[in-house]
Structure formats: structure tokens, C-alpha cells
Image (tube, rainbow, N blue to C red; front, side):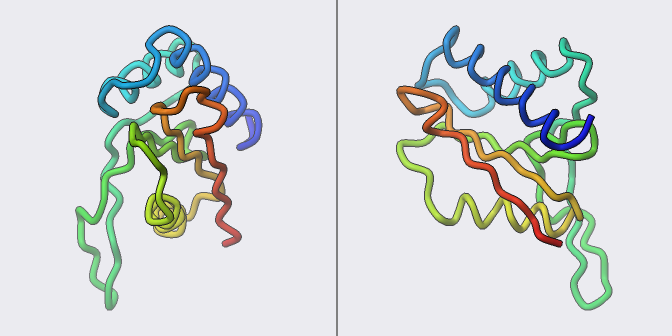
Length: 125
């Protein structure tokens, strides 16, 4: 599957989760359930994967932890906040740059309609 096909599955699973659980839960709950749904859809998925930072040619082993990396192609950053801030989008773009991946999805489950809480971020490498 390519990045777009993977992102479609992630979005579909997010809709299903939002309908069943609604807004207002902790990010960790949505992460756990999304991991379950993606695994159920036969997508390889990693949770809380350490993403090292290279600074002055020194690898800092634990720079960040991504919420989910799906099929080694798409980073999913999960939020449950009143408003997605510009810093959240920059955070995901930084994760994409550090990992060398092209596509990220920022999903805020704290929206009345989850479609309003999904932002695609593309790393133009």
C-alpha cells in the first residue's frame, strides 16, 4: 500500500472510533483504540516509537516519541484538544523530517465531527 491508501484506512478507522467513543477522552485512549483498529485491518503499526535526533553528527537516542507509525510510511499524531495549534502541525512536520517519511496525519478527536480534526501534513523532502 502507498501512503494515500494507508491514510484512507487510518481516516476510516478514525471515523469509526469517533462515532463509537465520541470526543472527550484522553489521547492515550484514542491511540490505543486506533492501534487496535489498524492492526485489525492488517496494517503493521508501531506505538510510541522513539525517533532520535541527530545534532552536530551526534545521535541523541531519544529525541521524540511518535504516537503511531503505520506500515513504515505514515506518521499519525493524535490529539484530544480544544484547538489544534500551529505548533502541533510543526511538531508533526518535524517528525516527518527527522524520520524521512513523506506523509503525516494530525488527528484531533476532540471535534464534534472528526473530519474537521484531520490535517494532512506532507514532507516535501
